[in-house]
Length: 428
Length: 195
Image (cartoon, rainbow over all chains, first blue to last red; front, side):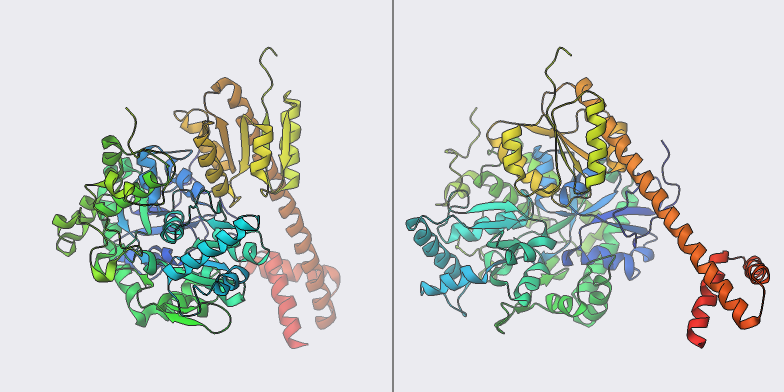
């Protein structure tokens, strides 16, 4: 078997999805990185495009992919050295969940924000008719109004609505479920959850194949500006600190190429800081809009970056100042409490039972030690690594619950809506 | 064959490629092969077919939907794992490189699935080769057309014979260390601007 002998040979503008040769072979300072075209890949793209990787002596070869399953497999089978990943993916891998779990760690978080929940215009109109919500209402009021509509639909024997998320182990799945459950809706019984690739969400909504979805930017705004969807909740409404994308890599790679990985983290940190600066948003949007990256209008991307929302096509607007946060308040730090919150949601929805081995496995997915080794004094105080989440006024969960990482079974049991699995504990 | 035949589901948006794979599987004696070109309704198909092996094109973004389905089916105790033997990384790498991904019912013997995967990989590769050849043939045809046009322009504007026009193009290409088609293309472009 022959491997690619050149790190520069792969063209980003290849018209079809090219199959990269094995990564890690190309050169001592080259990293091959897989990504999915989403705004939250900005830090990775900016690191490659605006000189942050080069400044650390790294060459970042970015490879666009079409599915999270591909990202996972290509990382596992060494076609990628690192990858843009959903934060629950390394956690699921370490827990042995999914169809191809292979050890994956997250030493860096690519930022917060970007997700939102969009419902069809028709469904939202029905919610407004209940009188429980309206143009100015918040995410919780919207969820309660949806619960009322669902009760009405059940009474009339109508088919339950179908909502799309992106992947079984995704922030979108857990955020969609959190929002529904906060309104008293059981996501496994009262609605139907399916997986829809993000670029297809707006078409699927327009065609009536789904009635709503939770995905990352820019797809909510694409649907609302097209007039097919109404944004009913943003991630900031559900839990502002919710972990989003991370950089994932194989632990053996991190061990064998530690210096290269630490250089990458440094480059990503600098790129993240640059991405947060509004003065750079026009340049960033311009690069992101290119066909080899997101292939979306630059103007729309500028709006996403500044958190200016079109909620619908009737001119309802909302500005969320922290809609996309890449660097501020240690957004890049892989805080272990976040890995455990993800684990708690997996337990809540019956993907895995609670166990001490599981707790250890989930914790091992996040690697703040590598972040700390790269960024030193700029890192947050490790004393807060297992802090309770959702306590501060500006960081509350929409239902007011507080996540205590050392009391996961009680936390999960405290939710009135969760999977009907009986006990949350592993029966042994 | 003493063992019951395996049920195989092929999901591929490319109708030509999937028929090449289907043919290969049938030639290898697999008669229970189902091919679908789109994933809508795939949940029902899987439920009715209960396939032992699912082969899906790796460029299909709906792979994530399959992951979701398997997550659901896992809960009703029908475990499906990707690839037969994780220790056989060379085979897996070849599959991923060829653009094949596969899901296999857990517990199925490696000897039974390996030939199916190998076959899918070689057929995927054969299809890519075919596409490449087709693209090459197309661009050769295009090149010939451009050269013909450039020749015509040179003959008309500079009063050359066909042989002289061709020789001029070839000489210029050699001097500039470029392909003849590139020189021809500049002649055509320039003529378009000047006339």
